[in-house]
Length: 196
Image (cartoon, rainbow, N blue to C red):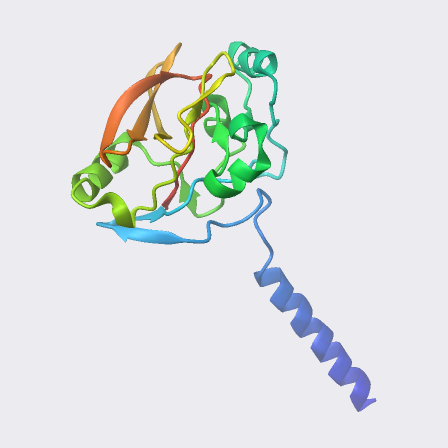
């Protein structure tokens, strides 16, 4: 009888432990982060293929399908040049509709940084950006072609500048300076996260 109680206790403990260590529905929690001023930033580009609720984000490979996702305002992601090896190195590229989808792209406890958070990072990081791990993932044009891999990094912000055609993005080039620019919502950029 004592053996049964022991096994019952052991099973209950294992179930309780596994409930505390369950992964997020949208793949995984960011592995590494760094504190810059009051904000904690991920040090690597986002690499998830599911929304927070567990639904898949469509992977779009062909130029025509990428452009169609933009015109239909549908979420999409891709690897640079559709090569999963590039994804392991630089994460995935997402269009604006993926990051702005109500199902949520960032894992629980994290969010896509807004313009003010990027500006704050730029003020504190432009003198020495090296600790903010540079992953120059390039980008995917709205027409589907890829550009500037391993040369320039582009990251979305959560802010919208124009409801029809543009959204803020931040770029980092080999001069190691964060700058702000505008981009079409069908463009594929990398994403960094800030802890809530």
